[in-house]
Length: 251
Ligand code: HEC
Ligand code: HEC
Image 1 (cartoon, rainbow, N blue to C red):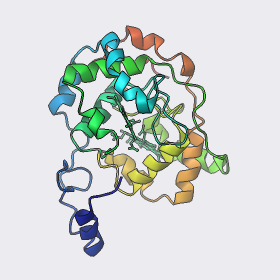
Image 2 (image 1 turned 45 degrees about the horizontal axis):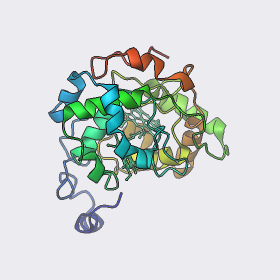
Image 3 (image 1 turned 90 degrees about the vertical axis):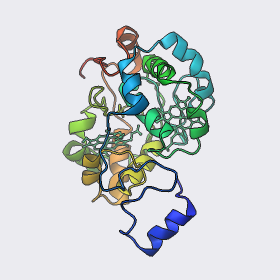
Image 4 (image 1 turned 180 degrees about the vertical axis):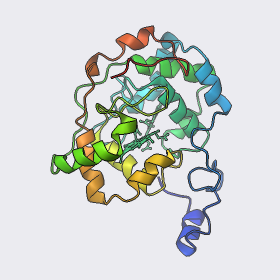
């Protein structure tokens, strides 16, 4: 994501001086002093309370499948993330953040705003959660998996889970089955403050990482598999969509 020019220029001129300002026309995020991660407000909180209808959601997903593919698998080249089997809570948060201009996504934004209301948002996320995680996500080159494992276990596992299953209740995403190249971009953006809706506790741990550390850890993460990895969707069909849902059984 590229910042609008005037803002980028401001940063270049006076680093630190602009930290209390969001880029013009955007919602203040992690760069702002009073940033509160995952504030419970707006259409997100409404969508989380609603019961999503996966059948209606399937229809709404058509516009999304142009980029994310009908399977939800995205692309190994990292342009479009894997979505299938993601917790509906996480999907609702991320899409609501994109719609609110708290997570910058100029490519998807024009499509994200075509969703009519919080019910359509809940429906589409209920549907995506039912899709099985695909088998062929992009992996890294496998250069330094040992370092990746050590860092993951030390700094990331407590939130993302030993198998990359995340936590539906806490809005921690499933990382298992996600593409290496997409995660590489996200992890770098998170470290450098460009993913403006990020969890500050994650930013704290990732801040000290070199590009090489990030590469090793993301390579390791791209190989994580959950026990029900390719079968995800079966429990989701029964699960209640939204914030009250238990999501998937603990993994
Ligand atoms: C024109 C292409 C395009 C379309 C159409 C599109 N997206 Fe996206 N989407 C993207 C891109 C690119 C990203 C990743 C942006 C980034 O790198 O931060 C993304 C990211 C996401 C994410 C965040 C994933 C994560 O792991 O955090 C979700 C959820 C998502 N899209 C859902 C949808 C839904 C639902 C629709 C349909 C309403 C949709 N997208 C339509 C391109 C698209
Ligand atoms: C305090 C909990 C926590 C810790 C610790 C944590 N994460 Fe995260 N991670 C999150 C949350 C929450 C998100 C979703 C972003 C958001 O909306 O805040 C996320 C998102 C991500 C994403 C993007 C996933 C996507 O689908 O877009 C990557 C990559 C990631 N984390 C990597 C890491 C790595 C690497 C570490 C360890 C160095 C780590 N995380 C540590 C909570 C955490």
